[in-house]
Length: 133
Image (cartoon, rainbow, N blue to C red; front, side, top):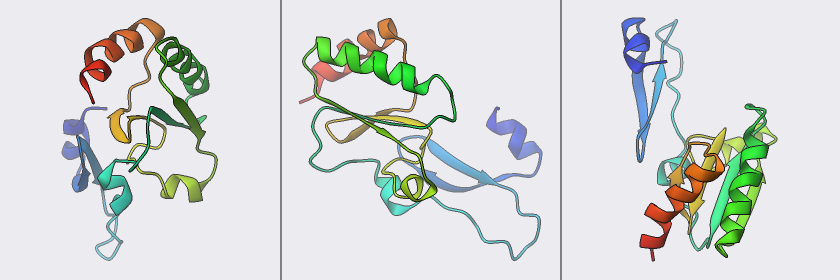
């Protein structure tokens, strides 16, 4: 949904995380706690990590299939990969990304939260990764 829809319904931005994530909330009582991203998620980085790292859940039933497709593309280009399936609340709360449903990191840097089909992922790789150290 468009953010404008939620703002019109009384939601407000309560926290932000780079590069473009915003958390919206609507309090039903004044004393309700204000939610926030973890400091770890706000950093959106995995220090010392090399290659591609995929975090995903089954919240979308196609995530695992797309992770496999992206890993195949990465391997064709000799890029190291790691896939991490988020299967518990504890793991989700400890993520280095504000978007736990699906996130991709390259050399420890947040890359995208978009699930990419093979051709789009390969094109994305060509314009982004090869330009990165």
